[in-house]
Image (cartoon, rainbow, N blue to C red):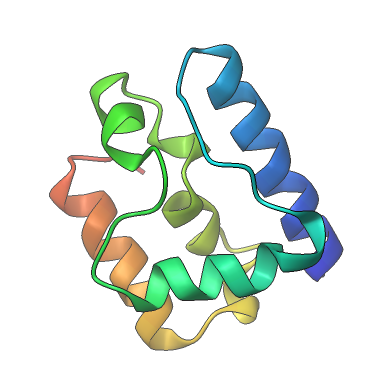
Length: 93
């Protein structure tokens, strides 16, 4: 399950980068740790604001964290944080 999430997240990040969204690199071996850190903190994930402006939040970590394929990888608190950020940004499911 983690491997599928990491592949989806790295794919979304590559798509965002092709759209001109500058993102810090995330090493595959650190991807889950990085995802948990961003969803446990007070800051939105890397590129979230720009993706919101471009109306492509489906490429954000937050959107993947609430995707039913991957919800079991995250705590309820992390998923709620992701959902709140998405709703605040006007993301339509």
